[in-house]
Each structure stands twice: as C-alpha cells, then as structure tokens.
Image 1 (spheres, rainbow, N blue to C red):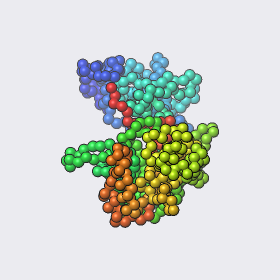
Image 2 (cartoon, one colour):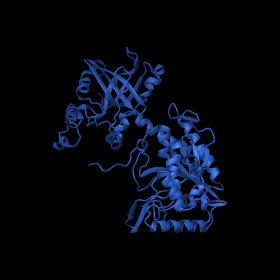
Image 3 (tube, rainbow, N blue to C red):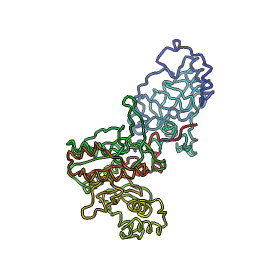
Image 4 (cartoon, helix red, strand yellow):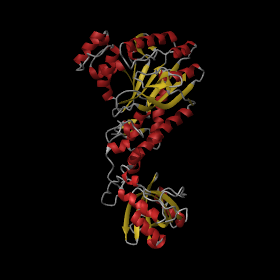
Length: 517
C-alpha cells in the first residue's frame, strides 16, 4: 500500500479513551484503524489521489483500455479474500468496478495489512492494468493500492442477490435514508440516480428559459411582508434592525417589481418556505420556479409551459416527447395540453352546474349533496376548489390546464372580461398532480389594492394563510406595469413525475424531519 510519506515518518497515534465511546463508531473498525496506524499506514494521511478514469470506463471503454494502466479510486463495496489474492468491488459516482489484488503484485506487507484492516466502506486508490477475469468480468489488476480513508461505522450494504446479477438488496429504512441521506446516496444507486435526474430537470428548465431570452435573477429570501401566495410563513428576527421578518413563501411580488423596472422577461429558481404540514407531496422548504414576461397573457404562459415540459421530457428521455409511467400510462408532452375550465370540470365529473354557486348557501348545499362537509367553508370560491380537488383532479392524467378560477381564491389574477366572478388563471396538472399556477397578472393598482384589502379582512378574521397588505408592491404598480403573464411551478413535484418517486422526500437531498431523539 503506497502512502505519500515514508512509513517510518508517519506519526504514531495513541488511542484516545474517548474515541471508543463515540456513539455509533464500531469498536472493531476503530481497533483496525489503530493497528494500521501502528504499522505506519495512516488511512487519513493521503490528501490527494490522481485518477485517470472513472470506474464506469472499465466496462464502457474496455476494448480501448485493455492491458493499459489506469488509476481509479472509490469506496469498497465488497471484499472476497482467497488466500494469496482477493477481489474488491469499488464504487464511485459513475458506478462500480472490480479490482483484483494479488499478494505477489502489491507486496506481502501491504496485502496482509489490507486483508486484516480493510472494511466495507473504506476508500482506496488503485493503480493497475485492465484485464478480463476467467468469468469475463472487466477488472483492474492492482499493482499498487493506497488506503485513502477509513469508515469507522458499519455500512448497511445489502447482501448481493444470488446468480451473479451484481445487484443488492436496497436500504429501505426510511429513518436512515432521509435523515442520513449521505448513506442512502452511496448504498442505493437508484436513490442517487433519482436525485441526479432531479438536478438535470432543473438544468433543463434553465436551458429552455435562457434560450427563450429570460434573465435569471435573485430576489430577497428575508421579507418584511411574505406575499405572492396563500400560505403561512415562517417568522424570524433581525437583531441589528430589531425587525420581525418572514422567510419568503413565493417569488412573485419581487419579480413583478422587476417588470415594473423595465426587465421584460425574468425568472428565478429558488427555495421558498411555507409553515405548513408535511406529506408525500409537501415539504415546508421546496424549490420554486417563477417566471414573468411583459406584453403577454395567460395563453402566452400556456405556450411557455408546454415548451418547458416538452424540453424536460426530451432531456430525460433521450429526445422523446412522451414519458412512460407504467404499461398503461404514457404521458404525451408533444401535443397541445387539454384546456378545461374549472366549472366545466366540476359539472363533468361531479354533476354540479354553475347555478349551484350563485350563493354561499346554495354552494354549501351542493357540496353536502356531493358527500363533502361544508361546515368550515366561508367562500364560494373555496367550495369550488374543494370540489375540483375531489372530483376533477383524480381524472387529470394527461397534461391539462384547468382554467377560469373563482375570483375569491385568486387575489393576484386579472378578472375575466365579461364575468367578474372568474379570473384569468390556470393551474397545470400532470399525472394527477398540480404542478404549476399561472395568471394574466393584475396591473391595475386600484384593483390590486381592493384584492389586498379583502385578504386583510380574512387575515384579521384568523386566516393565517391570507395575503398581507404590501404597500411597497402597490407603490410599484402605481408607477405602471405593462400587461404581463406569470407562471410558478414546484420543481420537486415535477421531478417526482419524471423520476417515478412516490414521495417528495425522494427528490429532495435533505428533507425536513422531526428532530432526532
């Protein structure tokens, strides 16, 4: 085993008594660490190992690399000693590959140190030549091995399936998977691939918008008034200013300020924070895309949304505009999306016509007849959205725009011309999930003030999710904002669709969990 320093000059480490009591550290692994150090082989001494190839190259480029010397490194995934030789399986970000280590090639002392001191999860660097074993496995025949780091905790690698498939039982303990994501990433290859694909989806969105001439901008996370959405914010305190602030719940109002300022096509991809419940589709901290374009409207936003999803689909499916969910379901992103007014959907799937929403009382009666409890509803608009959620949304498999939402639940959208009960708004749905929200934006400051005042009354009545009055945003609108279309999309939910994840936690590297006991 090679080390950067002469073995005789490696410092001698005594065993601190407190090390053995560190929670979670394996006493057996700790004993091996001290034995290696006593032999002059400190596994934490190397600062660098220059690799010539990633591990996947051993398989993918075997014909070009056969007999050539390479330098590879990775985490030890499996160990099989057989007398004077052994096989080690290594993992790196690209995949896995096999190393053949023979005592006569790497030296007796080093081989014996490996055999007695190496554990699953340790990192090693290997220099050797590429060959194929008798069983036909492309491998690295080691000529030298460097121990690069030692794992002091037992690794929950699953046992390999029989039959030589190379696959292993997965780590399924959700407490470990989500709380110790770093373990999930190197144990479960499919978990790592899911999260990497989620990053590719974000990159595809950026690529599409950049090509379309949008500017990516940054807006404040700490805000005096957390507006732009109906959600309960997190509160914090700025000591120097002695001011209560909120973590943002949306990107909308500051992006619209930029439209007022003369930037005509802007977007932001950023974290937002909503003090709400946790479920398979909700995490209090998530990634939101919002974009705004001057001189366009709701139909312009539909074209952009169709283009974004088409580009995502092509990016993750090798150019295809369809995405296969199962044998029965294939999503089509190459065709125009269905456009369905919310009241038409309720009539189609719940059998309730628009006349039922003439008053709050009649809307409550219709809701009760549909089998839902109307006792807590205070707005006709809220009843309409609840009926949509229960009866229409479960039918929305293929990409769909639900349009013409009620005014009461849409305080930032333009009124529909000729029908002020409804607004120019759509929600986008893909495979039963709501993934985005868009408006023809209000640019009338007097209308916007009336909407904010109505929201303030709801907040005063105890609705913690109602929007606050934002006087600075109203001041911006009073300077004048051109006709504008806007769209917001939760990237985590989009990632769930294209990765097949069943929980939003599977597409967030570090989801919020209860404090560890």
